Length: 77
Image 1: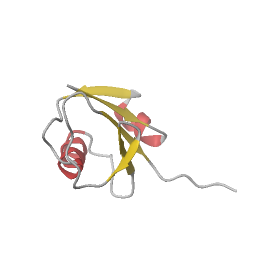
Image 2 (image 1 turned 60 degrees about the vertical axis):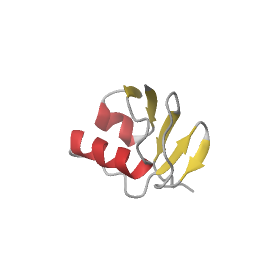
Image 3 (image 1 turned 90 degrees about the vertical axis):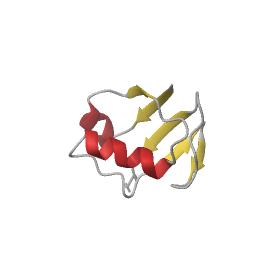
């Protein structure tokens, strides 16, 4: 099982700051696809992904017990 963290507006879409999800063996891209199917208003196209507090690419594979975070772009002045 994996813990998935959501930040900023993604937290509002999901309604929680984190979920438990079995993502082991899936790529980040596959996980994003599953989540966008489950949450219609979720857009993960420009979101940074981290696995175990290190940035990950869409091709990286999630392992059992990994902590995954989706971090939207931030703007400000």
